[in-house]
Every structure is written in C-alpha cells, then in structure tokens.
Image (cartoon, rainbow, N blue to C red):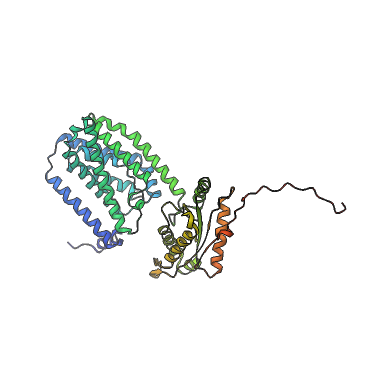
Length: 448
C-alpha cells in the first residue's frame, strides 16, 4: 500500500531534519545503540510476577507525579527552555536499580511517553528532543543496572559502607552516562558551547544529584516495603516547586532575546561588585557597547531578523570575555560589560584589548536569517565601544561609572563608529564622587 502524500509531507517537515547533519548522525547512533541494547534485554528477559508488579507501581507513580505537577512542569518547560533538571529521575533511576533491564526500559518508556503528551508537547518541545532525552535515560539506566549486577545486586545494600559504595557507584554510572550523552548532543549542535551549556549550572547539577539520592533512598526502602513509595511524593513535589521558583527567578533576570542579564539585574550585581572592589582595592572596569546602524537592519529585514542579529552580537560579546564577567543588555542595541580583577599593572591596556577583540569579532559576524523573500545572511555589522576603569573613590555609583563609559562610547561614535575609546587615567575622577557641599556663607550686601 503506497504511503499517502500527506503522510510523506508531515515526515519531511519533522523538526529534526532542520538540525545539522552531524546532530542527526549523533542522535541516530545513540538511539540505534539504545534499541540494540533494549532488544538484547528483552530477548534475555525472564519475567517474574513480583518484578512486573513493581514495574507497574513505579510507572504508575511516575504518571501520578506528572499529573499532580503538570502545571508546575509546563511552567518549567516554558520558562526554562534549556533546563537540565529532570525530576522524573526519581522514578526512572529507582526502576534502573530494582528492575531487570527489560522492565526498567518499559517503565522509562511509559513515564516519558506520558511526559511527552502531558508536558513536553503542550510546551511545544520538538519530539526528537523528548526522544533523545528518554534514550539517554534508558542508556543511563542500563549502565546503572550493570553496576548493580557487578556489585552483587540489591542484597549488598544492607552491608554498611559497602552498600553505600555500591549504591554510589550505580548513581555515578547513571549520572555520568546521562550527562555525557546530553553534553555530546549539545557539543555537536553548538561547537562553541561553554561548560554551563554542556552540563548546566552548578545549582542544576546539585538538584539533579539530590533527585538521584532521593531515588536511591526510594529504591532502598522499596526493598523493605512497597508502601514507602508514598513517602516520596511530598519531598519531590516540594523540590519541583523550588526548582520552578529558581527558574522563574532566573527568567526574571535574563533578557529573552539575548540570554544576557537584564539592565536591572546587571545594575544590582554591578553595585555589589563595585562595593567589593572598593573593599578589596581590586581593579574593576566597564564597557558600554552600541551596535552601529542597527535601525537599518530592522527597517530592511524586519524585527525578527534584528532579534537574530542581537542574539549573535550577544554571543560574540560573551565569547570574548571571561566567565565571571557580567554581560548585560541595556535595551535596544546597547550592551554593557563589567570586568573585575583585571591585571592591575596593565588594566587599561587589557580593557582596550578586550574591547578591540569584541569589535573585531562583530565585524566578522555573518548572521543567517529567514525573511519573507527567503534565507539570507546579514553581515557588514560593526559596534562602537566605550570603556573606563572604575575609580575606588568612596561614593562612586554605577550610574556615574556608566556615564563615564558612555562618554567614551559617544567619542567612538563621533570618530566614525566601529571604534574603541577607553578613558585615560587623567579622565577618570579621583576625588570623592559625593563631596559634601560647603556650608552656605552669609550673604554680604553690596552696601557693606
């Protein structure tokens, strides 16, 4: 029976085909490996009534957890598009520790299929992402099961430190395989990805480890009584809401178009950094950057293309500064960078070099965009940069520092744009920024 044209069209329009060839290749290899290992597990499977019931219990618990927390999870997926925290781990890892490979994979597939229809699909996540995530979990579960088998099975968990070591080894295997596979996918899709892009932020890693530990304790208690599964729901739901709060807080401080800090968030952190630098007598510098002739991009290609250019420029700025430098968007096409701890002996020269690297990198940008007339590449971009060292004088404010850097930015603009201007030592105020006003003198009448 011939395949209908409508079906062929829908398959060719899957989001996965828009990915680079190297990404499709990695996804295909990883998923094929998972299918082979799952096939082997099912061929060797010898079911027992107890194992089947436990698999149904864990799958049902995972589904109930999703149903109870559907609103929270949908909010998390919409707010934290690149969230690395998956609290379903509490069920999938417990299944990996307690069930034979075939039933563990069936439990994981059940949990993630339900997640797709209830959480990921309504949040408009591509199916291939959900499939790959489930695949990494399946492979991580198989790795953890092998560790459990090698260390003597669940009977060894009651053996004091030896049991802790066995459970810890299985936890490490599960986490390592899962994180490394996700990091591989991110690395091939984003060659210039940072460590945080690959593995997530430290607090995300901490939450995932906490979830794994909770799953390990669940598995341990289930060897005593299956009723202990009820004790997991309260802590996992509380943890889920805590993660949502953190992600909402992060979203509130992050500019949606560029991923940089918002002006308010940058300003708050800059105040703290200035106070710290003053106490420690350490160097601190600020750059203000403005994309030249950005209005032409919006007027010629539209605001969607302009947003793509802003995101590309933001990535260029981040690529040329250190991980602990604060990069923010001040609105429109203006960016700001706070650079702490520059080498004191050559701080101004180092600031000049950083600004110049950013300027050059922006001139080399080629930004692919989609327009009503088809795809095109926007190039010939340039940026003007002004900078200054932050004086240590008491009372110096962020606003005063920005004003000084902004003055240099306008000098760069006036010189023809696509230029860098850094305030010299003689141009940086050294007196107190907020001198007390002199006491008013009595007026002297002209007649006296």
